[in-house]
Length: 209
Image (cartoon, rainbow, N blue to C red; front, top):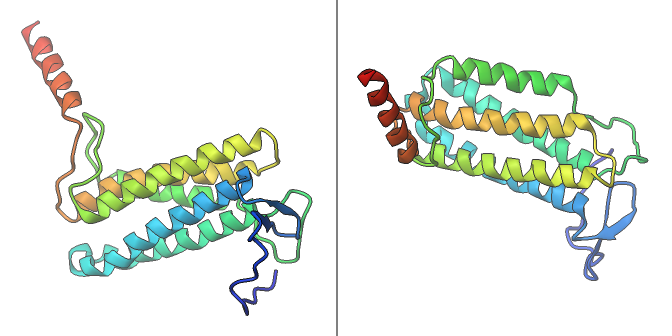
């Protein structure tokens, strides 16, 4: 699909309708628009993370280029996801990209790479401890919302399983990212203290046996 943006406003949506890829008009509150609009929101949050990463170049050291390129790739992949969600099942065009197993496997590889450097969790994590951690948790929650919306749309319309699997795996990847960046930058990781208290009581109980 050729991309050519010459005029930003068209007035075509002033009555609450907009066009999907292929030209079909749908209400702006339709589920498919909510789905790719939420993916767009997610992309924006990751853009914030990516904008701040150069501030940590020295602290990331050898991982800086790898991490920066990973974020760049994910932003581009999310644009592909949005494009696919904006295209009805009966529409096709030359050069159309469809999400597949390769993108999911790449996320899983990154999850494994980052996770092998992390300690096991003894409680649920809370957003915060550092700027990038907090924004990555925000991205994770938006990603989960995008997944829920896609499943709701899929009840009535055709959405590729690969798209939803990708979004699901990305939410996992963002969670591990949030932990990895905190450790890599030497920042605190906030944990749910009630979970820690429960773990402490169980440990004491086991020691008393």
